[in-house]
Length: 250
Length: 230
Image 1 (spheres, rainbow over the protein chains, first blue to last red):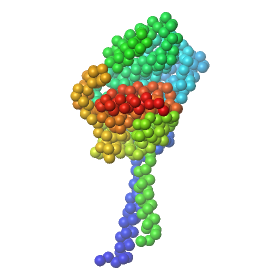
Image 2: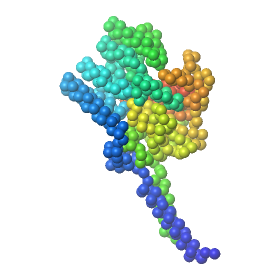
Image 3: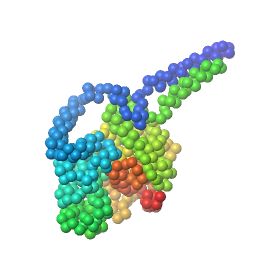
Image 4: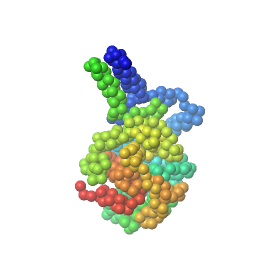
């Protein structure tokens, strides 16, 4: 039978262990990041991100660097072709496209009523993007389709509809096995440039049908563009295009 | 028992609780760029401001608001780690039998070029699977045959693999497909500080995911919910 003094000592030791365990648990746990706060890379628990790449990763890094250099050259060449005002807009576009921050307010504030020169540079940027860059390509497709005013704009969209379908997110040229659980997300992303274009074409027609359809050149090119989309081997793209052809008698 | 012993035990308990409340914690092996992407995506969701919400959205999430979305996520997911999630093109997953409150990300989270709202839809879809009390909202097996409104069989675009019989459908609007569809439809309709791109993307991905609801009456109820005048 323990004395009251011994019992107190046991309780005290137990609480001390609990206190030490709690402190250790708190201070030695992995990095905590508040989603509301910007991440501090110095706190990263992955310090060897850049120094311990495997051989195959090193190869990819070299390729990525080369591509980034080519991309920067394209950007520099585009800037040289643009007015100062358009350079600001083009930079906004680059910032949003490369960051992937799709809710950047500049998308609606700066990137509307685009000049023909700026559109040409966006189209050129699109053509130089890797096909696997679905969101970036879709972003350009969205910008042009939201603001289509000329046959040239619609012809660019026709080019998008004429592209070979992208077969997988990792490599547009290769079919890879997909888990049906979230394959719907891949299906949309793989065809995002085309679906974004159709979405915006429909919106423009809903808002400005008379203005667009009473212009013979626009009407002719729109018909050709939708015909290209309706010829797609992707059912989602084909069916949406056919729906628009029927709805607007195109 | 002495008062200081009581205070010491309360402090120990408090430290342990503080470590588990609120913010998401990343495992050490989650690369910095994946952490950054996840933090940015959650920040995007947490900053949404809406000017309305449908009945189903209020039932599941509350208002169309960043605060509601932040609470929804953080009351379900407390940790993030790296896992292949079965391989293939998976971006994220929850493995309920292992840890229902941990989300696993794959390298595809940053390597695949999905729109931000699509990635967020996946994250919120997966977070719904953490709800042990609701059977983790396990998916239905899609019906056999599984056809769309026009009678065409639902198949994967390229592989032609049929969805019929696969555990890739929901028979309720409250499951992972249903709830994330409702979330995105409401963002598309009511987000007051979203770019036109975000609202368009939300509409496109949600409309398509509606196809995973395999009970016509439930699908009709969801469409009715989306179209109800506020």
